Length: 451
Image (cartoon, rainbow, N blue to C red):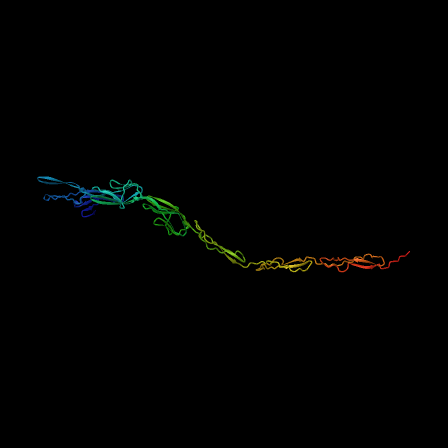
C-alpha cells in the first residue's frame, strides 16, 4: 500500500482508494502499468454528486474544477406538499486542448521511410493545430501532410527531415504544445575518405576516415583484413582517423576503414606506402696498398644498406668509395743506359783506323738494390777509311839492252819502273832516272884489208 495524500491510497492490488470524496475529486483518472516489455494505460471517469442547500427554499448547484463532462442540461426540481416545479438550465464547458494518446519525446525511423509524429488533441471548441521545426512553420506539401487527427505525416524521409518538431494546439480555452525529436536512422556514409599516401620513414601520417549515419557509426581499421590494435605508434583517433607515428617500412600495406552501425556498414581501402631512403653503412677497413713498394693508393668502401632504399626511396647521397695515397719501402730502381757519348778521335789519320764511344748507366742509375745496366758500355767502329798516299819506289833494273855496236865503242841501256810500288793516292813519284846508259864494246874494230 502506498499513501499519496490525505485522501488517496494505492492498494496492493493497484486500485486507487479515495477517502471522503468531494466534488473536486471528480474527473478522469489514468492508471499506468510499466515493465521492461512495455507500457499499458487505463482510464476511468469519476462523478461526484453535490448536495443541495434547501434552506429558505433556495438552492444552488456549485461545481468546482469543472470539466467537459460537466456540460449538459441540469434540471432543478422544487417540491412541497401541494406540488412541484422544475427549472431547466444548460451548462457548456469549454475544454482547453489536451493531448491524447501515447507521448514519446523522440521518434526514430529509417531514412527514406515514413514517419508519423503524433499530436492527437481534444478540446472544445476543437483546437487548431500547427507544426513548426526550430521555430519555423512546417510547409505542408504532397510529401509532408497534417492528418485529420493533427498528427504530422512525413513520407519518404530525407536527412533534412531530422530534427526537433513542435506541435501547438490552440482554442478559446487555452494553448498547449509538445515537442518531439525525429531521428532518421541511415546506414553509414563516408564523408571524409582516406587518400593514398606516400611518406618518408620516421614521419607521422594521418589517414582520415569519417562517416555519418544514424545511429552514429563506429569506425574500425584493418590491414589486409586483420584488425588494427592501437599501440604506442598506431592509434585510432576519436574522429575515426588512423594516426601512424614514426612510420616504418613494415607499415607499407593496404588499409581498410570500416564504418558500421545498426543499419549496415561500408568499407573503403587505401594504399599506404612508407618510403625508406638509403643510408650508408660505416666505412669498411682500408684495402691493401695497390703496390708493394713505392707510392700507391688505398681504397675503402661503404654500402648503401643502412638502411637499404625501399618503396621508391632515394639511393644514398654521396661517395661510396674513399681513396688515399700509401707509401711502402722504396722500389728497386733498375739501372738504364744514358745516351751514347760522342765518338772519340780516330786512331789513324788515314787508312783503316778505329774510334770508340761510351755510355753511362745513369738514366737512372741503379738504386735500392736495382740491377746494373745490361750490355756493353763501349762501342768501337772503323774510321778514316780513305787510303793513305803511297810513294812510288823503283823496281829492279831490267836487263841491259844489246850494245849498239859490236866494237869500237858503243852504248847499252837498261830501265827500271817506278812500280814497286807505283805511286798512288797522291804519293810521290820515284826519284831519279828510270834509264841507265853504259859504254860497251870499246875494243877497236879489226881493220879491213884493201884489195
